[in-house]
Length: 226
Image 1 (cartoon, rainbow, N blue to C red):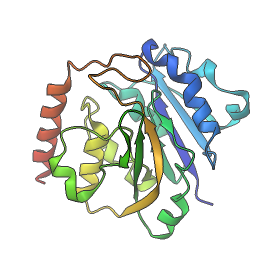
Image 2: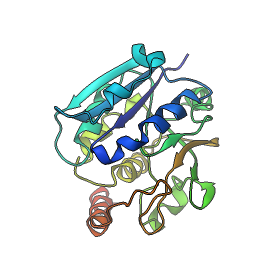
Image 3: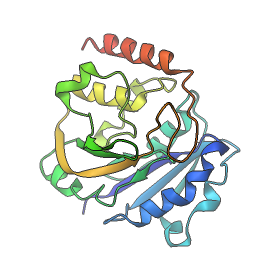
């Protein structure tokens, strides 16, 4: 059977409030992942490692990241995965129970990326904007790295770790390289979407880097000559 890794990273104590909810979502999956990679900055795990439920202790890889940039620990976690398929998920988001239901079919069709749906806590459900026909009109990242085959792990060596919308950049790089896409009918994740940068959990998101992130992604698009 195709194996699955889940990767998450915790960068700040502010997001530790989501730990219980994150683990509950993992436990609700129709299919448990074969491996969970937990990445943190070196010397500070903000309670992430202590939060591991007993029932999953044997499937955990702990990574104290040494990488630099906004996503340094996340990239280190990605490198540590050993499964056929890899799914990233932020601590403040949740996997939907159906997140992995179509992985075997995607594998059978020789796809390398799974395009699915995202359920937004504010705004309802809609298709997850990983679609080739509308990427050029986007001005923000869909949230949560799309499920991808292990063969695409080298992409993370191309994408700068300080590029704030690295999930969006990953997808654009896949389009540039004509990666096989599988369109799932299921939902991958539940995203704690903020209105005026405040999530339904009450956390105020920092919008100070939005202009920089927009510029970064436009520069990346130009570098790909898309």
